[in-house]
Structures are given as structure tokens and as C-alpha cells.
Image (cartoon, rainbow, N blue to C red):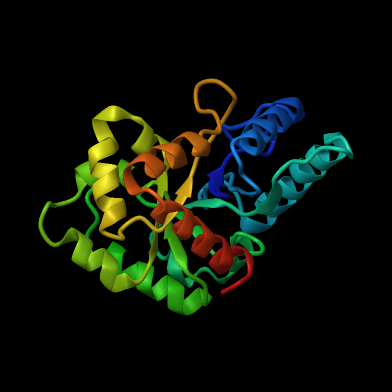
Length: 234
């Protein structure tokens, strides 16, 4: 099972605050069946350059690796970033270096406002310019800002991928909507978006368990296809 969105790297952002906490988060994910996890700390172009971010990320990752016991059976970590959208991001060649390693995807956090046509068009331009798929992070967090008519058609025309957080399925007040979007094929990837061990913990296993109840064996086939496409580069 792949967790495509997490904040497990220590002292990178508002996620894990220590190597010990990072290891605990990885252990929790492993116990739920996660075998691969994308470490996607926040990247804000108005606060630092991609070069500075990558240096900080490498230092954080190395500290974590050194602290992990040799006999641990923890998920494989794929370094990446959660890039905050900004005007003109599609022409920033350096963002290619922030893709999720081993999967060649760029995780993008969109504005928490109504998206205009220019923003949506830039998603297509970014995929063409960078040459890798764009993944919209936690789609459920933007939906209340968007129009009820025509929104999904515009998004589907861009060919971007859609990631949902596990909580979208876990929380009872949003579960029906999450399952509806999943069954319509509008959710392509799942992530925990975990930040710590308590308030926002690794919880992908719980979401998959809910999907098992509602979608029967289809979820297992979906997960197998996901792993083949992402990890094996297809």
C-alpha cells in the first residue's frame, strides 16, 4: 500500500518535530500495511528557493536514516514535496527536482479559493512543460470553494491526477461524498497527509478498511494497479 502524501521528515515544516516522532509515524504506517510512503514537506516559493529546500530536505532525510534501527521493517521513503501553487509555477523548470522520486509525480497544493480558468489551464501547461503528471493534493479541501456546475469537466480535461486524504473517507460527514467520487473514478490516489502521531496521524489503513466494506474486492485490485503504475514506473 502506498501513502502518497505525508509530512514525516523531521523539522521540515509543520509535520514531524523530531526523528523519534518520524520513526513512530513510520511504524504506525507499517502496521497498517503501508510499504511505500512519499515524504512531501511543504514548499513555498515565496519563502525559499528550490535549491535551499532540497538542501534542507536532504539533511532532514539523512538524520532520519541514521536514527532508524537496521532491523526495522519500515516503509520505503520516496522524497518529494507538496508545492504550493503560485502564478507562473508551470514555467519553473526547477520544480522538476521536487517531484516524488521513484514515481515522477509533482504534488501540488492549490489555493483555497475559487479557481479561475487561468489557474486550471496552468495545470495542463505545467504537465507539458515539466514532462511529469501533476497530482492535486487533498482535493476534498477545495470543493466548497468551487462551482457546482462544470468544475469536474474542466479538471478532467487537464488530465491531472487527484489525491484524497484518508480522513475524507474516515469522517462520517464526508464519507458519502468521498465514496461517490471514488466510484466515479475521480479519486486516483490516496494519502494520509499525516503530520504527527496524535492529531493528524498515519491513518491510510483505516480508510482502506472502509473502502473494503463499501467496494468489496475492487479496492484490492485498485491498490495493485496503483502500485504497478507508481512504483514500477508505468
